[in-house]
Length: 174
Image (tube, rainbow, N blue to C red):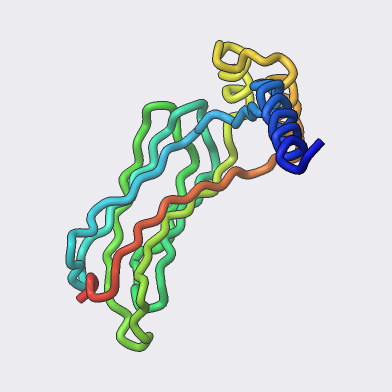
C-alpha cells in the first residue's frame, strides 16, 4: 500500500468516526436563566455626569438576596455602585441608575469598560420544575444530571452569579 492510499484510508476511517459520533454525546444542558441583565445609557461620547441604566428582570422563580455591583475601568467612577434587593419575581423589573464620572486621578485606559454584576439565591424549586416540564430537555440522562447538579447547589445554598459588560474605545468618556 503506497503512502497516498494509507493517507486516504486514515482519512476515511476518521470521517466514519466523526459521522458515527452521536449528537446526544455532544449535547449539554444548561440551567435556564433565572434573571436577565442589560446595560444602557452610554451614548457615543459619555460626558461626566451621564447616567448609566442597568436593568434586572426576573424570569424563573422568586430569586432572593440580590446584590448588584457596578464595576469599571480605573478611570471611571460609578455612583452609586452597589444595590440590594430582597427578592425578584418572574416578570418583575428593577431599574438601577448610576452616574458616571471620569476619575481624574487615574490614567486613562485604552479600553473603558463598565460591568454590572449580580449575585443571588435562585429559586431552585422553580428551576427544577422548569427543567422537568420543558420538552427541550428530552435526553433523560442529561436532564437527570442537570437536576442532580441543581439539587446539590440547592443543598449547599449556592449563590448564582451573572454579569453584563459594556466596552467603549478611548476618548468616548469626556
